[in-house]
Image (cartoon, rainbow, N blue to C red; front, top):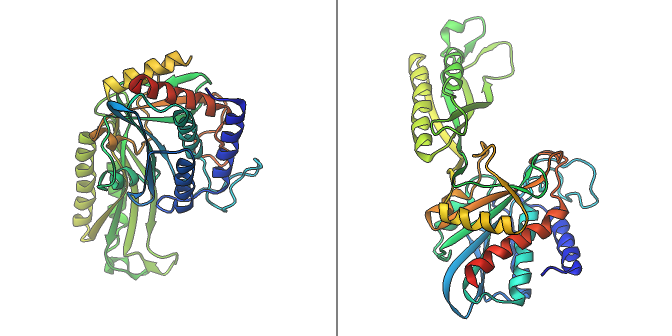
Length: 379
């Protein structure tokens, strides 16, 4: 299976990826490095530029069989990394603080193993997705005619706060849907001594904020779960002599299902429009970071769970689905897909924290789990 030399080289590879992070949609060097590695490992086919910077590589068997996809993410985050590791990011303000370089390394390890012994049947596709952090990458890849068809799709995500050798998985919703709503309110300014001559958004904002947050209800374990989080507000100019005439409100909407999200979007926009109309304001909307709900297919979940148990993981569905979103859900419209969360340790720094670092000792167990799934489906 994996030798000590494999593990050492994969660890070095992970740390080198960590040193050279790239933001969503800008993963050109990372994609080139991945494509070169797949070439070195003798992939039967490599396709680049899928959905922007995406890379897919095929390892084929000699007989007909299922097409099985394993996904990792290429992008990093616009966050300043804390001082600490020797392999700290070389790009100030950009860092792999979600473990995507560790997920790429898992697929690199899988490629090593299947390059030494090809699938007996079917095809193993390794898919490296751009722009996961913005929710744009999977949609772009799925819209690209260069993306191959596949029957199954699997993904691992590391999970701080969960003990090592533990994993979370369940059929159904694994990650919530979410979207960022930006509402711009436009009125007219006046001198601060004559506020009655302005059309100020202040009264509208006073009505909108409690109405939006009042839409939140339930927990993510309930199908009608809704969470509305106000993330940013700006109004007018930083001056004492002007009655403000414009404002922006940034809100994150979150639900368990895509159907619930459609309803929540309609309700939230209605609240803003009604308040704007009451105050004689113009209103315009923008939508950002649009994530579909990520749902585990029952068959794919059973395959993944069985492989994880065979690899010694202790499985649970505690706390699922995650409130946090994941840009894996849209692949479920193409194939039977499932994601599993592997514990990083109960005291490990959380995802997106400045001092987060993917644990190197998770590399081997991730590779062996992915390889077992590939063997189970293509042997």
